Image (cartoon, rainbow, N blue to C red; front, side):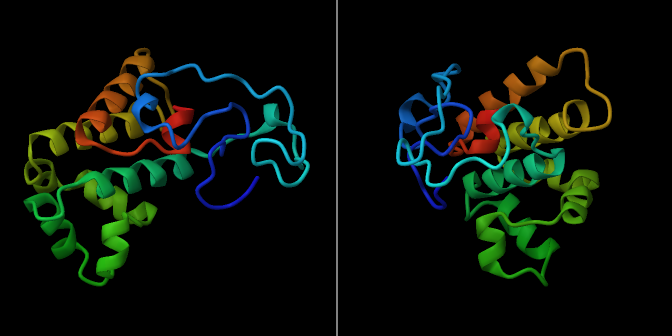
Length: 169
C-alpha cells in the first residue's frame, strides 16, 4: 500500500477515504477482489493474507483518541484542559491528538475532563470510554454493536473525520 493520503487505503475493502459525505452513511464498501500491483493504490505484493490481519486494540484506541482530539473545539474548555493537564507535551502533539496509552488511561480516570468539554464533545468522550471498556478491553459486552454505533454517531455529530481505524469498527 502507498503511504500518505490515498483514495483506497484499506487493504480489505475498497473504502474511499476521499468520499467524506458517505463515510458515516455507507457501512458496506465493496470488498477487494485482488491485490494486484498497480491497481487501486497497491504498490507491492502483500506480505500477509488479508484474512490474517489483526489490529491490536491499543492501536485502534490511539487512533480513536487522535480523531477525538482533532475534532475538538480548539478554543473550548476541554481542549484547554488537555493543554494544562499535559504541560510537557508540545502544542503540536496535542493539536494532532498524539497521546500515549498511559496518558489516555489517566484522562479516562479523571472526572474533571468528563465535565469540561461541551455537550457534543462530552457525548463523544463518554462513548470513547465505553468502547475502551466494553469493546477494546479484555471482555466484550453483550451489546458491543450498540456501543460501536454510539461511538460512530457521536463522532459524526462532533465532525470527526473517519479514519481506517474507525472504518474497521
